[in-house]
Length: 177
Ligand code: SF4
Image 1 (tube, rainbow, N blue to C red):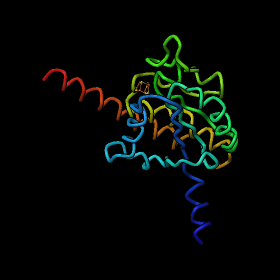
Image 2 (cartoon, rainbow, N blue to C red; image 1 turned 90 degrees about the horizontal axis):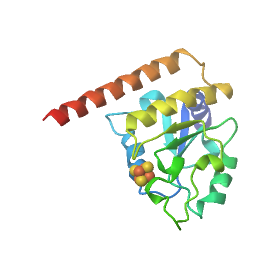
Image 3 (cartoon, rainbow, N blue to C red; image 1 turned 45 degrees about the vertical axis):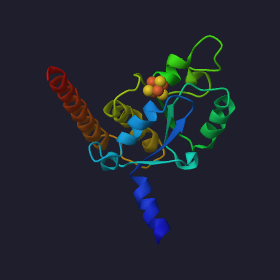
C-alpha cells in the first residue's frame, strides 16, 4: 500500500538532491529558503532529499575541493538516468572567492560532471534557483516517462517568474526606504 502510494507521488514529482562541494554555505542557505512558506517548493512537486539514487536533479553548490573531485563523480554515477545537474552560485562555476593562488579548488564543476543549468550569483536568489530547477527538471522526468511535458512546466515557470518579479520589487522598495 505504502509502496503504491509512493509510486503515484513519485510519478508526478521532481526529486532533487543537494551536494555541497566546498563553499561558505551561503548558497545552501538560499536552497533551504525554498522550503519556507514564502517559496513553498513542494507546491511545484519538487522534493529535496539527500539520496542521489532517487534524484532527478542534482544541485551542486561549492567550489569543488580536493576531497570532492572523485566523490562528486561517484555521486553523479549513482543518480538514475536521465538526470540533470544545476550548478548553483559562482563557486561551482569559477571557484569564486576560494579560487586563489595555491588553493585546492578545482572549479568549474563542469570539468567533472555535465552541467545542464547554471545559476550565477554569490549567492543567487532562491527564485533564480527555483527557475533553473523548473527549466531543466520537468524535461528530465518526462524523459523517464513520468510527467506530461508542457502545461505543468509552463504554469510552474510562470509562477516562478512572478516570484522573481515580486522579489525584485520588494528589493527596490527596501532600497528606497
Ligand atoms: S557562491 Fe558565494 S554564497 Fe555561494 S557558496 Fe560560493 S562564496 Fe558562498
